[in-house]
Amino acid sequence: MTEYVLILISAVLVNNFVLVQFLGLCPFMGVSNKVETAMGMSLATTFVLTLSSVLSYLTWQYILVPFSLEYLRTISFILVIAVAVQFTEMFVRKASPLLYRVLGVFLPLITSNCAVLGVALLNVRKEETTFLSSLTYGFGAALGFSLVLVLFAAMRERIAVADVPEAFRGPSIGLITAGLMSLAFMGFSGLIKL
Amino acid sequence: MAFITVTSPHTTQTGNHTGAFMRQVLYATVPGLAVLTWLFGFGTLINLLWAIPVALASEALVLKARGRDVRFFLADYSAVVTAVLLALAIPPTAPWWLTLVGVSFSIVVAKQIYGGLGMNPFNPAMVGYVLLLISFPVEMTRWIAPHEAPSLMESVQLFLGSTSADAFTGATPLDTFRTWAGDAEKLASQAILNGKLAGQGWDWVNLAFLVGGLYLVWRKIITWHIPVGVLAGLALTATPFWLYDPVRYGTPVFHLFSGAAMLGAFFIATDPVSAATSRLGRLIYGFLIGVLVWVIRSHGGYPDAMAFAVLLMNLSAPMIDYYTQPRTYGHKAAHRGASR
Image (tube, rainbow over all chains, first blue to last red; front, side):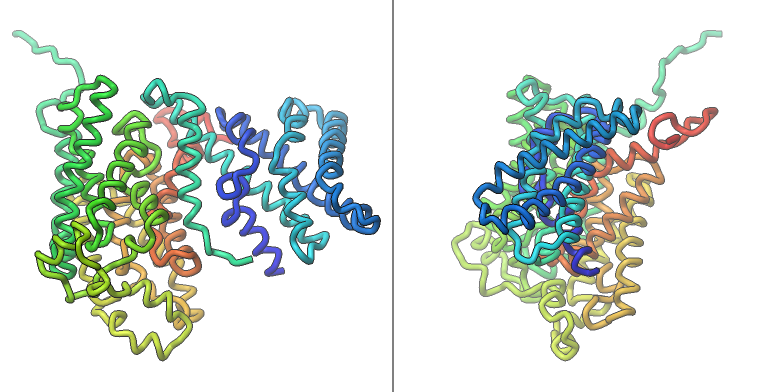
């Protein structure tokens, strides 16, 4: 049990995917202009990231390793993620049209989120990956992504009305802010040794 | 009878402008500065006298480049306050270039790029401090052992970088506790941990900043919410862990009177620009700073954590505000955030 809590804290704070490992920066910059859209994106990413983390682990464990096809992991994980996203989209569309409308274009966008592929690849690189640990790791990565995305969106709403010099408006000040956030997250380093 | 018609606000003549407030903050740092100088020599004072012109010059440079009124903005003393807080936070053995890098980064990147006073999402002084701590960890952790202060001449040499600081440096109480946590005998034998209240010397520093902070609360420069939140967060987190294992975890009093606890609670976390704004929001903001300070002090990779905790809550402050918007008088719950 402790092991899973540590994996979770590590993925959310200490090795935050966006601010410490610098993965998934495109949606981080792209959909952080409003808090509401950031929350929608967080929900969709959390679901897909957890699902694809587990699916790619299963692919690795029961298809790639038995057939000695480890070198195909990148391409097969991309395929798995794309399929997971597609199925999620189809399912959500039928099961809950309201949620589908809320998530909108973000669902297919997740396919190109490098954090999703990053989680899948990092997962199988660790020794002793189990079904539960890959589930926890995927969920923790998604929680960390959602946390900083929503906080960042709230900050950007405030920066949008600040008297920023012309040359720094828009994405430039966004990236500087992300850098300073990353500086703050350095405080968590050393909190957990995994 | 002739009526005088004056448009609001009606308080223009009372001198309640930004500069006056900022000057009060500067006065309130005097006891802390005095104790730091008494314990650790003139290093902090020299840093401070060097940091102020650097801050003013950086601010003037940016204002000039942006075509703003340089004299008007320099007169609000906000750059001086940033410089003073950073100078108080960095070790007295710091060479001149350390202060130069920290202060200019604080002013230019953390403050002016966001549009100057009132716009910066992060506390400028703490951004500078964290940048220095990450980039120059050796220089930033060289504190002087209390009562072994270098002379004025030696302090000047340290400042110019012409002499090594190794002769004066000693571990701070927080460093010492961190090193020997879990070892009861070693902890008992460390002289620096046996101060009147907490670590030797550092309890006086914190008491002095507490006095200065209470002055700020009394003059209504800051409200009580954030300092009380920070100190309560720190003490309430420290207490159960201390009761559970007093050898591994410090006492609440030790935490409250060590490192930058009081300086942070009263002077740094209370920055009105980068903190949460509503009363409830300020209490939450302060409390979480206290909790984070304890977590990073006890489990993290850094012995003190005020700067990191403040920055982490700075970046959460807009979200806290989003959910703690107070109800407008005459209306039901606020439309955004709180009603959902």
